[in-house]
Length: 452
Image (tube, rainbow, N blue to C red; front, top):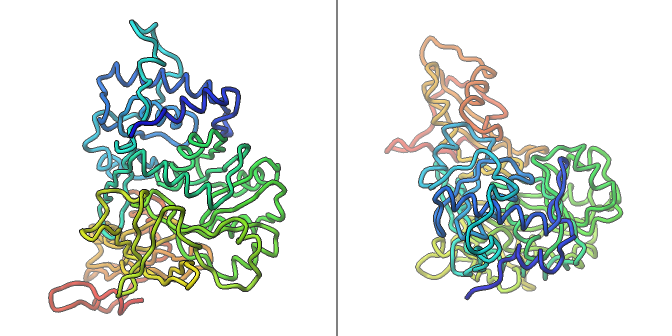
């Protein structure tokens, strides 16, 4: 099934409406559409064809939004790359891309197009079965795993989110999440589908987000437990225009929810993952506002047209049109690797993870990846990385290190070593030196459960 290109429709319906607003500037839907058309023409001139992959190695902002929509208009597959990653990590994610964008595309056509105008040339719309983007996620392995998300996945996710969050035509959704992650990228795409405004910050900075919320012009914001806590610590209280602070990305302590309610911050809990194109279950805004302090935290019912089930071993299973085709098991379900239970009213409670992945400040960290870096240090014999409960991060990445004979590595020097090779959120918050060998199975596998 083909539909009109979302950006083209938004530009036709609301040409003067602000599409993207950033601290560096903003643009209307008419302006964004013109820039995306110019970008699509530039990509085509560089040899990019529909269904080919374009890695976008740009920070969140106007340049990223233009490049993203240029890919979608052309029919190319956008591959967002987190600019915070180490060079080797970014290079790994860019493998297989036909083009890597590290500089902004021109916002205007370089030359007058021959033949059909750019708007007619790229008027094919979106094939809902076609792949729109590839998002990389660490999942349970050390190497990032690509997930192919279709236009249909994004469209159904936007519809389900709108039903849960009572989307309004004048919504302004603040995105301070990485646009290389499905949570951040979905805000940009969802806003184009709705023809509403995405307020985009390159990174989460407490004072900047706090200021935006206090201005009284932001109606929705996406947060994780860590960033919600930072805002409350900074004095966020009763933001006048905020309808919903959508909070997920990991466990959200009940005490934090109670603090938010006392401060008059309307929090809606959500559970999701890349393979399901962001949200899976979300507490509807009306129910979030009616929730009482002290009530147990749940991630809400399944999104519209999304199905939830619990496997015999407690694993959360997901099905529906938001689930990436390549992520479905032979039984048709997405096996999330997370554990939970469903109440009688269909509300989901997430209780833990089957995998060993650490969720620190809303970011997924694969312990084996951090261990490999530490064990490459000449003074380290072996290392184990575990999660420790932390009020600020939810889970703090903690490393237990066994030094080589005669070596005495300092914790801070090892952290600096990691910082040169890993993204900041993967660097251990604490490194503990131990003289005891790590517990392992007979086959040599680390018994991580004996360390936690």
